[in-house]
Amino acid sequence: MDYKITERIKNILASDKMADPQHICEVLKDELKPLIESYIELDSDIRVRFKKERDKNIFWIEFSADRIKPFGYIPY
Image (cartoon, rainbow, N blue to C red):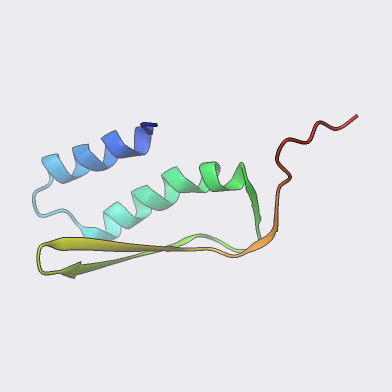
């Protein structure tokens, strides 16, 4: 499954070799929020953090939810 976010992040990283981690975190947050809200009822905003370790880019995505929306349920 290929998401639009994959291409957007690749474009950011390719066009900006000195990629601003905060900008990438904001893009991830904006792209992930609608996807997450399709499945989960958030009770606070999404938090995206970034850390560089040697040659790896590590991201943490945190959020809390009131509930998980039901799957396979068709209301009457």
